[in-house]
Image (cartoon, rainbow, N blue to C red; front, top):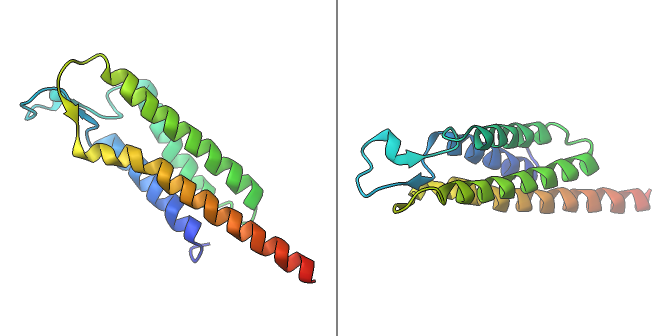
Length: 136
């Protein structure tokens, strides 16, 4: 389980999902000393629920390593959820005028990249197992 590269990608995606709950995605004004001048996943309840589901799904997907087809589908589902999450962040951002993206918003943007790498690794494992089955 831990020696497979997709486990690393899934753990990194889960870590970034949980970090996006804590760190800001968007700063509202030029003076960002106050906590009300920024928003993260905990600001909106729907985004919070989606982010928690995303992080938990990434962690759960690590432990179904013996069922590679299910692991691929769960990772694709997590990819769709992460893209929906980014869309909701930008949709929620439209309510504010001024400000800009925070540096820590990279956590939300890097999750789909990690998930794509995980799907690629799972697919390579699946292909390797199929080639071994042909040799038997």
